[in-house]
Amino acid sequence: MTNNDYRDFPKARGSKEKVQVIFVLQDGQPIGYASFRRDSDWSDLGVASGSVTMREIFAESDAALLALARRLTTLDLTTSIKIWDRRMDDPLLWWAGGPRNINVRVGDSPWLRLVDVPRALAQRGYASPVDVVLGIADAYCPWNSGRWRLTIDDAGQAHCSRTQDDADLELPVQALAAAYLGGRSLVSQAPIHGVVDHTPGALTRLSRAMRSDIEPMGAIGF
Image 1 (cartoon, rainbow, N blue to C red):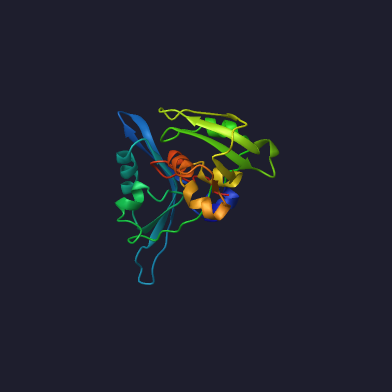
Image 2: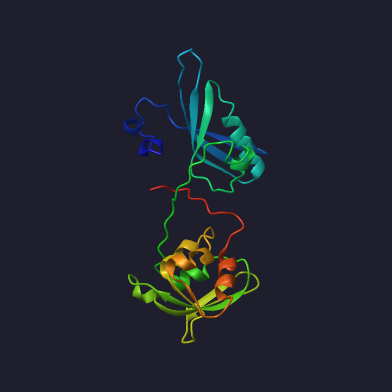
């Protein structure tokens, strides 16, 4: 996507249509919205073949999301729709019949850099209880380096503090950051980043605890 697709002030917009916004309402209250721009086009035979570029679409429920998507696929004089910045398990992808039926392009979007490991680990949710000591290496933020005990209770609440106990896992901070949003497992990164599992099963337990039922969505590009 070019920068002009996201910027809507006159100089960047040029001759393109202003960004439009539609809402879906329930009992008179907005529960979802979509912002989009239409680009008109005509084939050599005089047949309309315009496109709709959807910049953002968010809703409180799957039903509201589908209502917005259906409206945008029925705009006059358009034959295609582009939707940016969605996750791979997004309902829109599978309502359309899956990746074989549409042109899907995959790219990375959010990059994380953990600058305060204990705070970051304590403030996210987890899928299962774990008690593990992490030996973290961080060459650029040395205050993150060392051994940290991460304790997660049955409710998914976590506490992380320094410890002198032996590490169950040794890993670089970038592996932890890549798994932080729940979309990329620690297990898959073990052979790439040299994660060392000193206590058998510790890597698997923490990896599963950090996974999310729903894939993270990279809604901000750079």
